[in-house]
Length: 434
Image 1 (cartoon, rainbow, N blue to C red):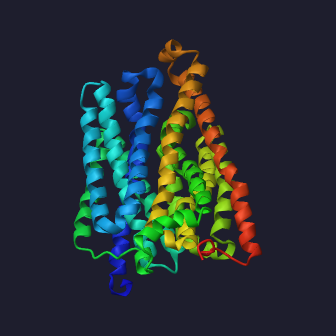
Image 2: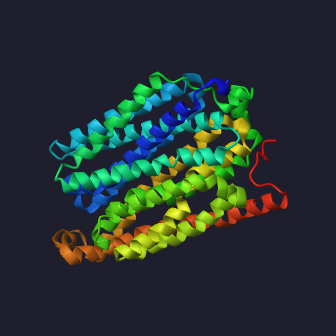
Image 3: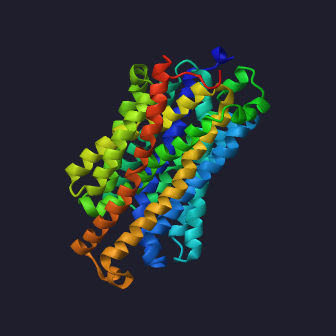
């Protein structure tokens, strides 16, 4: 029974696991330009940004695959096994990328980095597959509030990782130090999970059979509206976050990771108030308003040419995307309780699958724009200083503006659902599955 579990210990394990994946996100954002400059520019200058997008996208492939299969298996293998797997993925994946950086540059370097990021992505997905159903099982009456607090530790990890990365750089430590830092929370998480008693999922507690959980996909086809909505909200939040350092460092005149750190601090604070806000305007209303802010902020980031403009736009973007991921999970859990961990995992899978397509596309848009602005590969290779900054500024505008359109697509979707709920006197309940 849930009453017999150590809720504080479980929440600690959940927070640490989310902190670890946030830390990994910041590390990848911090080292993306280093990988491009030290390895991929030498491997293929014309496609270097696209290669960065591909290896970063590998993280989301692993994330999506683990959620797709792990969410269906978490009841079978247990939450402990999933979290142990995530810790191993982060440790081994980090070691592979470090090893690739010390080898002579070749296609093998690319594949080691690809596999290393893939493993960290598998670990990321395992965290989501275990931690989200764990929290909904322990706190069934306050899902939006608790999931947002849980996922507040994602931006907390980004803040710590980003600041640590800046510190390593100031101390002239090699960029590989960022990856070695990921081993610490992985080891601590592995230790804690061995001595923690985990609950069964909410679906098991309610007596819904394993087979009925899968049948719910056919009984509640409206779920797929949320599946596709998650693809768009995740792309609006995570793709720019992974890209911001690479795109803004040479354009705004500051390290782009500072923008990511600032937005993450903002998100950490704001997610603690999600429950109170959702009670006033509903969870779906929170998503609708978020789309407006996200689109405005992303468009502003694309045009930012100074630190002040970048921070102002990032504030709007951060406010917009702050509640996307945890609130999407809570809405799905509230509306489709019989779907259990499967529906939660599929929702996360939609987010990871989306980023796998969006990040390489952002890289391709960036590469095409920089070649257009420079006048070809040969000309690009000769540019430096202000001329190169002008090329990168143009490329950044093109890549960010493409993503800025995504949240606008969801405005009529969330708006229609919000109005329907209000007309029925419903804030955010399990109306589809009852």
